[in-house]
Amino acid sequence: MTDTAAGKPANNRVAPPSALRRHGSQLGIISVGLVMWLSFVIAAPAVFTNVNIYAAFAQTTPQFGIIALALTFVVITGEIDLSFPSVMALGTAAFCLVTAYGGAPWYLGLVVAFATGAACGLLNGFLVAKLNIPSLVITIGTSFLFRGLELVLMNGTGVPLTAKEYPAMHAIFREPVFGFPVQTLWMIVIAGVLWVLLNRTRFGAHVFLVGDNPTSARLMGINVVGVKTGAFVLVGVLAVFAGILTSIYGYYFWPTTGDGFLLNTIASVFLGGTSVFGGTGSVIGTFVASYIIGAINAGIVSAGINAFYTQLAFGFVIVISVVLQIIIERRIRRQSLTGR
Amino acid sequence: MADTATATATATKAEAKTPVIELKNVTKTFGEVRSLSDVNFAVYPGEIVGLLGDNGAGKSTLVKTIMGFHSPDPGGEIYFHGERIHEWSVARARSLGIETVYQERALCEKQPIWRNMFMGREPRTKWGLLDVKRMREECSRLMSDHMGFTSAAVHPDNVVTTMSGGEKQGVAITRALHFDAELVILDEPTMGLSLTETKKTLDFVSSIKKAGKSAVFIDHNIFHVYPVVDRLYVLDRGRVAGVYNKSQISMDDLIDRLYRVARTGELE
Image (tube, rainbow over the protein chains, first blue to last red):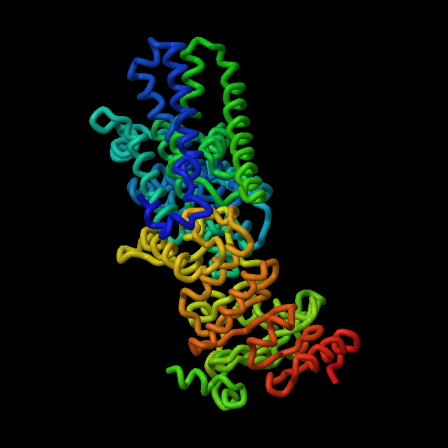
């Protein structure tokens, strides 16, 4: 429909990009998801026609998927954040300290927890964007910092988060809504908000520009430091959200919360078609990819395949998707060089 | 309107007016490298100023200082319409109507044209959200109306990587022109362009003057610069080696002096 707006089609040397080119990576990821789902259904029909398996996915996937949605922003700006598992723990620890030990109401605990996440994001953003330290290195450092702080504050002990002690929290973060897993409802709402943030706000527009070419962005007056810091703060806050979701789901805050979340989350972002080089990426892609990653584990086990194959399957899916992405990107670049 | 434009056209008359932008005693050092030393530079309303100088003379640094990308060392002063400006930044400069077409074009090549066109000043709806529809439509209109380059009929959703050098330059120039800039700075705009594309760029420079606006035109090629400018600055090793009204100097004379300054550092 926008094609007719191009003016004089007769003069068009370059055609408008096809829907395939524009939404290629998103369509790709959706078809990968469908193919995987179909093969699971064929391999284990009894399991995959049963609604319980989907209810299980829908409860566990958002625990890392919500962070992946936010991490997409950081990756588009050309950076990475490896500290979010520790932020999950530190933020949830802050919640426990304020409510269980401090006696404050749950909502105050949430405010303190999210503020903690935002502060972690600010620190990461400051170190990466303002001081220009490679994010791959410095977020490993801050990861230890946040985890260490959490362990010291909690003295290495956990906190029970029972429905009796925290009825409101369980209602918000655990109880199904009309039988639908609330975790996935949260993921849908957050994905919707982040889609608008990325595609319909100046901040989102600048996220793309900063990741594509930070020098150009700066020459055009874009606050590169501010944009990158904003993306890190987003990850910080949503990591805490995921930490609370995970802990309430397990009725208990473990001081090791976040362990084992790193690779799933990062894999979801890259599988979702977000460029490893920055500048391109999509919220929808990450959303679908999160559920694919979440399904692989359960799918393989239910299909009767030895669970040792899970990691292998993960590896294949991630390596193949990143390789395909790079090949497509190179082809587009070569086409532009040869003028075809 | 047209009268005032022609009246201010000659540099001598313009001298009496307040410059659009003026730099006083601007020095810029990067570590131990002094890129600009004690530069005084002014552009008057309706004037096209040429900026000549060898590689490393400080042309790009001067441009980026005017644009607020670099801030001058302490002691340097920037005036906009006679008013001293302390908090100078790219966003500030652009909001006051100073636009630059950079040598490196300053495009984000993986992004569609419409995102590049509105980079840094994206229009928003009344709810504060990005007005993507307007950006696409406006971009499409600008491309057919203004980007008079040979194969400019490109779709706003095309990614910049897929475009030719001339088309990319078209995007950069249209971006500067579209926002009704009062002062347009062109940093080597003809570099890597075909003959027809170069001519269109030069026509564009002349059109800025016709519209009563000012421009700074930087180019290696004196044959491009001389015909369109009113006044010329010659930069050499970070300092202003000479300032000429075009009426005072012929092209041959200017070429002789440029050779001399390159060899000896002295114009006379």
